[in-house]
Every structure is written in C-alpha cells, then in structure tokens.
Image (cartoon, rainbow, N blue to C red; front, top):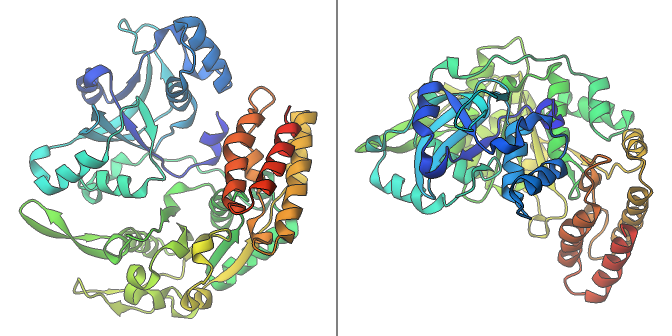
Amino acid sequence: MNIEDADNMMPRYWVYHPGEQAGKWKECLERGLMLLGWPELGDFSRYVSKSDIEEALRKAYGKPNMYNTRKAIWDMGHVIKPGDVVFACKGRNTILGRGIVQDGYHYDEHDPDGYRNRRPVKWTALDPGKVPDEQWSEVRDSLYINKTLTDISYDHERVSMLDGLFDVESMDDDDTPVYDCPEYGREEFLNDVYMSDTDYERVTALLKRKKNLILQGAPGVGKTYAAKRLAYALLGSKDPTRVQMVQFHQSYSYEDFIMGYRPSGDGFELKHGVFYRFCKQAEADDERDYCFIIDEINRGNLSRIFGETFMLIEQDKRGMRLQLPYADESFGVPANVYIIGLMNTADRSLAMIDYALRRRFAFFTMEPGFDTDGFRQYRKGLESPTFDGLVGTVKELNDDIARDASLGPGFRIGHSFLCGLTKDDMDLDLIVEYELVPLLEEYWFDDRGKVDRWAERLRKAVR
C-alpha cells in the first residue's frame, strides 16, 4: 500500500473525466466503477515511483513531459482510497455525477476495450433540472478543469460549490465505507511525525486540558500532517469517521459552519453546516472522542463564522446550550469534541491574532524537525550524500532567517519540504528551484542579493 493511502485517511476530492467526451460515463454509472485506460502500461500498482511511470510512458508513446498523465496513473493506482469523493465531468464545465470510492484499485487484464484500471465507486447522477439556473451557471464558470484526474481537496470553495449541487446530507449511510481502524498512539505518532517525545507529551497534555489547540509554525514544519496524527493519537485509532477537517478563508461564513438558508429549487432551504453536523455526530456517540481540524484558522472572520457558538467551544462551557437564530432548537458543543487549529507564523498579513482566539485556545509552536530522531532515521535510509548536503545548507539558511530582524524564527523552512522522498525518486533540484527559491524571493523581496546568494548555495548543494 502506498504511504499516502496508509497515512492520509481524510477523504480527498477529485474531478474525473470518464473517457474522451465522457464516453465511459454510462458504463461507470451502471457498473459502479471509475475507469482509466492507457492499456500499454498494464497494472498501475506495479509502478513504485512516478519516474517509473514516466519511463513506461516514454517507451509506450514516445512523448516527453507527460506530467498530467503520469500523475493520473500514479493517483489512480496508489493515492485514491475508499471514502474519497469523485466528481465526474464532461469537458471543462459539465458535471455528470458525484461518487464515493468503495474499495481499492483493481486491474482487469481481460477487459477488451483497454479501460482495465478501475476502482469501485457508488455514483449519484446529477439531475440538472433540480439545480437553480444561477447556481448551475456559477459552477460552469468556475470549474474549468480538463485533465483526466485532478485532486481538488484543498480548493475548498470549489468542493463546496460542487457538493452544493447534490443533497449530500440525505445520501444513504451505505455510501460511507466501513474502515479498518488500526490502533494509533504515542509510538505510532512518533514514528510518523518528526517531533521529540517531550514535545509529544506536552502537546497532547495541552489538547486534553484545554480541548482547543493551535498548532503554529513556519512553512513546511508539517502542521497539517501532525494535526491529523495528533487527532488519531487522541482517539486511539486511525478512524477517519471521527475526524473532520475544513479550511477557513475570508468568504467562509456562519452558514457554511453552523447553519443557514441555501438556494433549493424555486426557494431556499435550511442547511446544516459542517461543524453543526460534526457536533451532532459526536453528541450521539458520547463515549468516544472526536476531533475537528481547522486549517488556516486565523484567515477566517471568527466572529462571523462561529457566531454565538464561539463561547460554547470554551472548555468550561462544553455541554452548555444556546438558542440558534435560524432554527427552533438549542445547540451545544459536546465535551468529547476536540478542536485543532492550524496557523502559519510566516503569514505577514496575519501578525495580529484576535484576542478571543488566544483566550480560547492553547498555542503550541512546531519547530523544523531536522534534528529529531525520526528525521535522522529517514535521512539515513536515503543513503544520499547529496540529500545530506542539502539538509545542512537548509539548516544554515534557517539560522540566517532566524537572525534576520524582519523575519525571525517563525519564517524558518520546515522539514516537510524534504520529506516523502525515496532513493529512486528524489528530484532535489526541482525542490530547490520551484519550492525553496520562490519562498526566499518572497521572504527577501527587497534584497535580491541575499536571495541570489542563498539560491546559489542551495543549487550547489544538489549538483
């Protein structure tokens, strides 16, 4: 199993084109499948790296730089997992249906028409007649994706817009696969996350005591990665049904989070928001813990998003109930709901943090993990002097960033920029050129000489 399948159990969202001009859509819908071609490559799961796929594509088709095809093949064979949501499309702006992946990848060598790569999917076809014209027009104007397979998990506005075309709340519970939830605790966390044992004990104690925690840190320290695994450690198992993640942005609202009226047919319908539904789920299962993760928490207008419920997340207000303005009911945040917020300390526009946020959350700063035992083991396993040299250069760069009066420790480069590599698939020059150097250009936008000096040192480290 690919490491992304094992570690990232949060559902992903995909846009998928079922064959040329959606010619395979009818078969996908009737047979409950997601299908991909490229029969010359055989079983997608046999490729252990993207570079292997690129080489196979070059031999089969003689075309260089088939980046999108390579990624689609890799994602189909290794990344997509049960529980992921797939939006089937035709062309650049027509939505055909929404599906939930039910099982793993399968290769059918006997399929006669070449679409031998498949995943079982439970599809719900879209009825365009039930979508208001203004909503349908908005989706058409914004989708504009023409690749075979595209991960849109972090484009939360697009995901919300596409989900809004379907009655997601009323979909049958059978759509949700039954997960195998292995035990997960301190040992598993420290194997996965490059954090010291002392910091793990401290951060878990903070979360349990306060119930609300902010993980803050520089770019690339692995805040999102660590938050998911901290949630699993709190729950005691890798159970994605008890973990929910959203991302705040300037347009995120109370209606998205708690409840509000949304267009439906010729009028409006009261819809429950993601946090409301999550709290109701936890309330009905009060003997087990639940964890709600908010990425970019300081980018949202918290008063607007939480409304009257902001008070209810406080540790001593759990279980207290307030009347909701949109519904004739009271609402409370259960004691078994824990909240983890994520915040980037290098965001210049968000230096001032709302006092209400500081009062309700404990704050824990994640450091770059280059010197942790876990990263040392990872580095040793790569057996690459070039990688070792790049790590040493980045650590020196971090010392310079930390001393810079206009930046400071909160702008240091995190270890996750150099994670997820294998002996056969490193691409260190690409990491330097397209990830690290642009970051330096943003940091020292007013000091071109400094950018050039450090860019040259990084490039030399990987030559």
